[in-house]
Image (cartoon, rainbow, N blue to C red; front, side, top):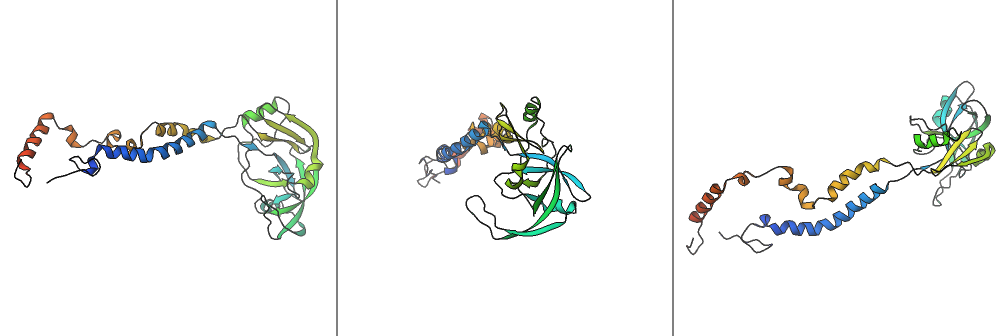
Length: 274
């Protein structure tokens, strides 16, 4: 029986050809290295969160009150309240409104019905309060990051106390738009060396900007990326590296010689020669 490799034309089975691993490595390693290096670069550079203007306020209804997270957004013409919060406070509907919302990219929605609720907004320590008419919304926005402990301490050293820096996470329940935001600004602004800016309102201080000290958990992937980047693609599934060895590899030299002699005695080609 004559066996010839179709890869290198030598006398062995193609699956055992040493050149096969080299070809696979050349064809797959370049794209894979590009992708892995890109991920490693992204991880090592670190990413920062841009803080939006959030604070904690007290919202009061006829009989109930609750401290919630509030987002100050001057890009919104109207102010909103979470529908569940309005129900919890037993707020009475003042009037309905139909609005079209213009979104980022020029997208405009159909007319949406909102119910307007009248409530009282208070600074959490009771130093200021005002009445506001807020439109209901089932979900106001997605996850809004909170300021880190180190950045909050930087403000505290300068006598600026931020209310929205607690550990427990919660959704935004009130959005103050341009219709009320301008009325509660005091005009005091403080810029910090960590890249953040604090703006004072009658409801409390808010921080905004890109923090230079806040890094996400993507750096935890760096050891794994470094491990993969230093390995050859064909080595990732190599049985030797995994510690799995064929029993044939454990044979002694004498066993191999005996097998070779046995093979030569019993294997013949068609011409009859050994």
